[in-house]
Image (cartoon, rainbow, N blue to C red; front, side, top):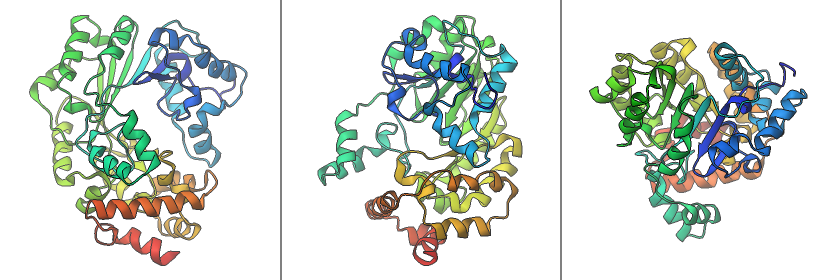
Length: 376
């Protein structure tokens, strides 16, 4: 087992999204998913294939997200995952039950972020229907396969038998804090006497303010980490990228930071906002503290992966960046081969959304507009 290829996730974690299970939320290739129940999936050949590769010191292709980040010298999540598990139980054990669960339990969402789609956000229903009516194949597939899932009770029933061993529970949406079922889940865990053993992570878009009942429930867990997904930090850029109200989100962040929870910011960078990484990372660093700001990189939809920006734009962004934290991020622009096809798809989809939402890029994001239509 090599420290340069090992990751604890497949040994201890299961990521659940509808019927599909995988060892990590950063595995995007469906070839490495299984639709077996939680217990069977965790012990499955699909999971063992990745564990076996790590045991041999090999880089398994399922983990391309981390390998790409590391190939250009940027930090990847796998080391953080491994260190967390090393501190908790030691590493490298073959278990029969997961110690860590990541669960996308709902697609109910009040935002329709440009880099998202209908499978993860009910806010995309109108525009996905419109695109389907125009013959868009991707939208047609999403619309035909979509179902509204405010709460996935079937998956909860699969998780419950493992509550006795779970040490880390991470909940994703949709927007997690919109769920009326969330308090019921927390109460059930508390009633089983497990809350004090579980480190809880909630990912939120920041649109929901703390409620006394929820805060009281959260206070009974071993630890609580509130992760804010913040991809823009001005009213216009936030509205353009996420469709939400930055001033309201900013106010809610302040209110959550007054509660007995750990707050963390995790911006996701794409072709839409990597140009603004200095301002985003600096603003969030001042609000949350430098060590409480991470970042994700859009891998899909591929059109939004910033590796596909024209070389002149990437060079412009790199040349004009001055913030130290950005230097850990920007090498990711060159982590894989650029595709002109994906770039043209980005331009086409962006223009369509600008018209659909009456949000011209030139008005809401003039800096990006100038880079695209001037720097190139």
